[in-house]
Amino acid sequence: MRRHRLPLLDPAERMRRLKRREERRRVGETHDPDATAAFLEWARGYDDPTFDGRSRARHEAWLAERRQPVLRLDSAQEPAALVEEVLRWEPDRR
Image (cartoon, rainbow, N blue to C red; front, side, top):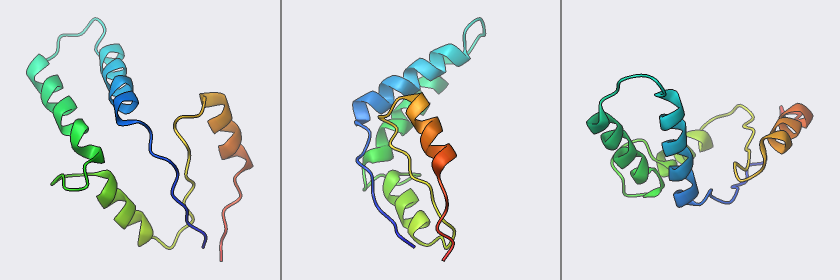
């Protein structure tokens, strides 16, 4: 099974997207700003391979152990391009 690594999404862009998503999810709702801040602090550690939690390094190690085909998408692409890539994907089932 062919595995390849895609370029990382710029961590600053990933955090910008997370913040925007959290803001949209909470429109019109009350929320705990301390909990949101704690979540965002945790999320900043994802790209740090020494982070002692769910991290990109741990996810990559877990994926490397999978026997199932894995579709990798470059999240820097536009959503329409990602949809097309998903629809064209034919898993390698060797």
